[in-house]
Length: 355
Image (cartoon, rainbow, N blue to C red; front, side):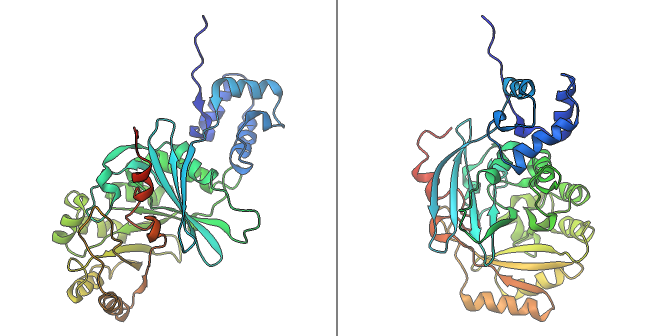
């Protein structure tokens, strides 16, 4: 009996790898651009739809590859219009993505890992532990499967890599996905300035990101001294604040851009007047804007949100020191779709038998 052909997900290929594969069958390199346009610009889910390829080429592709698609298990709608999606991947593991409505467009928050190994104490995802990295295909599928209603006047224009996982701990797959996302010839045509990657602070990879991409950088800082940050974020014991500030000072920033400093405000932990003054001094040499994110409560943490007065006092100190500071009220809190809440209520309700 002839062994069954094991197929690969074609969405995991880079253009160069597809050209290399096609060359084995004496298929000319320009065919790779045609195939990628069908996969990403036209979002074909079947090789037979690729009508500008000969039948023999389509059959050869179908013999060796499949076009990755995972299952949408659940969708929840927040009172503020935020939509949270729970996806089941082919091995049974699950991830979440969040579609956030803005005034004139949508922002999609995507995951890069199943679970997370960073162990940040304020984050619910951290309590799941780390399962595995997402593939290039699984990162991109979160965008490919995001359907906007035809009569909706808003378009999906912004992508944030701020979902489950630490993007820079899955660097190769994330970088390959970003290359597809930003390619205007055959990819998804997102502008680099419309994509933001958030990291807990893997310093060597931050240098790489600045050299390899033109996307925006966001740093989840959350404290202005090592003692507090060590307690909140174990990664600080490996890459302390001094090393993190050094890479931010030397980061390859494009003109007119700034690094976003994310600061989750936690009652009695990092929200004092002294904390604000230390943060102001710490960031002085850096081209930065600051997002203050009041802590979003969840059942895996005893932390609390500061009072509104405390948050505004903190903000005013930073403004007085000439920083651009926004208080970012996370959307989707009622469906556990806010910052630090992913893999919340939807996952709990539908997690029986999860791999």
